Length: 118
Image 1 (cartoon, one colour):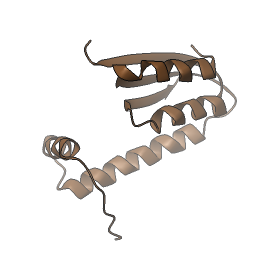
Image 2 (tube, one colour):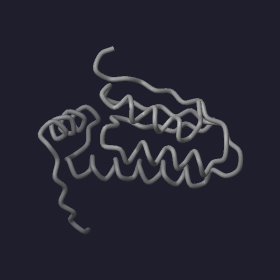
Image 3 (cartoon, one colour):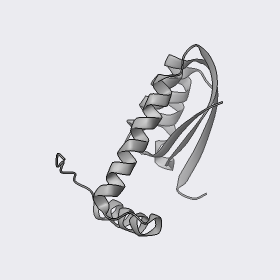
């Protein structure tokens, strides 16, 4: 098996350690492998979407990024504390919805991004 080095800050590493114990993983490497498998599976499901679809996109972000979220929302023309929850109810071409999802996922200010095809 190939070894890959990853740099993580102490906050993320602490969360990984807690989750590892809670979920019963044997070590950090197994946690990371499971996370990568999950991400690969989600991406395959997204790539399999075709034609007109309906979907919900859930995005959790820092409230300081509201302007950026609004720009992204308007660019696609679709419709607490220090975190905000955005729920986009989408209907349209799968490739456009995939592109919108990727823009949110690649933005480091997003805490969580989840596309749920209906």
